[in-house]
Image (tube, rainbow, N blue to C red; front, top):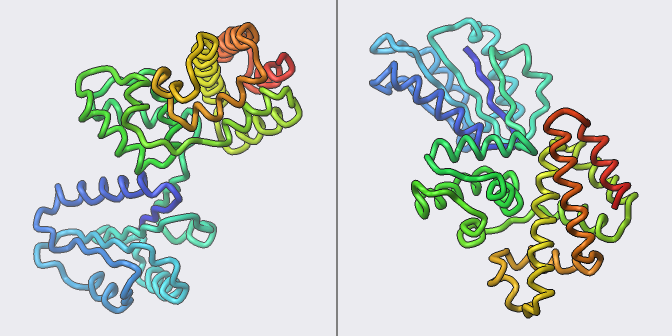
Length: 310
């Protein structure tokens, strides 16, 4: 049996590989017929010997090949051998090819039993993954905190998993709030969100529409985009209130508990809005967000409508 796991999201592909390995080890506890070959020092003859060797305990074999498809000669030799020896039909050998990064998949579709592509998560898929990881770690996290996590970390699931583990250690059994994110999470902020908001702040409707549509073309969900816009409007309102009450710029991060990068970018946007304008846009965003979630309007129409109203 041949399985191909590949894609840019190496966190989830590694998790899938671990899952396959654990399932195998639960059934075959000697572990003598589990072996991994990596790209460094690749030797096709040794792999063939392992496939053809007679098992001492009549157990199935699990053979993992990591990042071997970069080697064109090995790739050709292996799949020629696999076809000749009908490895796809061999139920006693589970052979997993694990490949990091993008892969032109067409040449492999008919050569394996199963393949799975792990593309980077975006939009609602990323949010749902965070919720699932939080549940696994038995921590409670609200939507605002999730949005801030996405803003700070993006879709780097290796870092995201580390940050969730850190939050779990810090506030086990308690609700994670945005202030906890500011305190503990190392930011790697999605600058594209700020570019979109900059265009909206400057009333550059043409650029704002183009950037919003680019977000959608990249696979981001309309509900996710609105949640990020709502989060940023809430941030602007908080900062505008502090500034109008005389808070010095150097003290804004401490008073607002926001990341310094967010303070800097948001302060630039604030110059283009009065408090009343911010409140009006914020309430309009909440209305539109509700209309999307209840199915009264489609997301794309709502985004275009929002830009036209600002």
